[in-house]
Image (cartoon, rainbow, N blue to C red; front, side, top):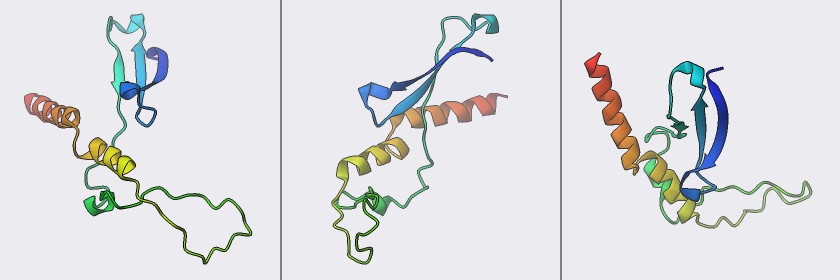
Length: 109
């Protein structure tokens, strides 16, 4: 393979933001560089209204088979989780910067 080591790291010490870190082998001729891959989704994957502060986007699994499936579950808002998803899709200046770099580099070819 091209990499001597492949690891997961927490971006900004956040357990909810894992990134993949790739260390190229010296034989590739790439010295002193580390590649970090950030998972992301397109900004239009979900409607933005779904991430309102009062919305619940975490679903709890059914713990007991004998529980009443027809009974409504009490769903609590998940504003922090919603904000993280929005941050990853819409609010990331890093992502915007990478999109500009990608567009410019393809124009240079």
